[in-house]
Amino acid sequence: MPNDRDFSGILVCKDLFFTAGVTATARGLGFEIKVCLSPKQLETTLAACPTVRAVIVDMNLLDPESPEAWSAIRASAPPPTVLAGFGSHVDTGRFTAAQAAGFDHVLPNSAFSGRMVEWLKSWLGA
Image (cartoon, rainbow, N blue to C red):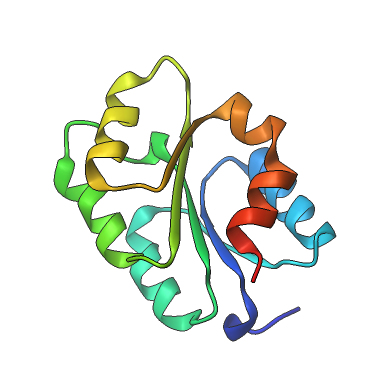
């Protein structure tokens, strides 16, 4: 098991099945992803993981009516860290909030899952 300094990415997600799929896919590509169960854990986790290249967020964990929560995520993971969000394609409020906060990628669940290998290689690679 890698120590905190060895993680390429952080996944903020509570869904155990989705988390298992993302972390297993990343591991198969040679990357390690640390999991946070809530956005509140992100800042501390990022401080402990200096090699992180990307933060991937389940947008369902953030209130679309709380722009400060979305901005706080971006502030915790400033560029060049890639900030990507995924969520239900019908949840336009969350897509709009993520884009307004400066997320680099905002994807429907199906697009993220369908091209996960490609996205992870792009976001986590050197």
